[in-house]
Length: 204
Image: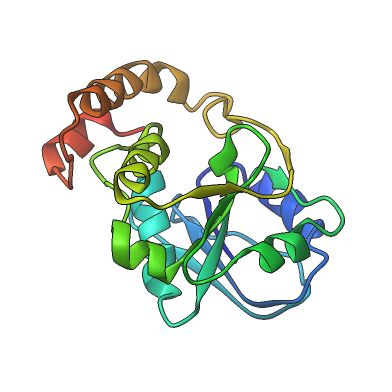
């Protein structure tokens, strides 16, 4: 299980408290770089990776995939979800090397598993969509073009956009700019890719 986080470490702790399935390796991608104290839980190994800057959603998901490439699939969860009883086992039962399973809960990509066969066919997420929004829609478009189905998995409880609404962070104002740029990129149909000037302009 890989969980990117930025500011809502309180939500992250609440999420981890709801884990009711054995997890071989828990990885927290700490985009704040400040470090985070985590509770003990049903995982064999835990790593917290402090990032020197906010990687954003797509790059964090790509890092999760790279770290899990030796496994058939990886589970990626937002830090502001709660796992209902049995949901993690249900995700595991539905997942596989050639499957992409997103939560039934909207926004569906708040929790998902992605198989390495899907990554091999479709590729990684487009890091041009920075720091958040439209990276999931762009990936769904490439899946559709490649004949890869996106399956709906179990529901989770989700505090939608809790990072965006972090008090005093100014993310909502910054997102009013980056969201529109990401939407324009998506509507253009072009591949974004990493552009340092774009990241600098859109950071929040």
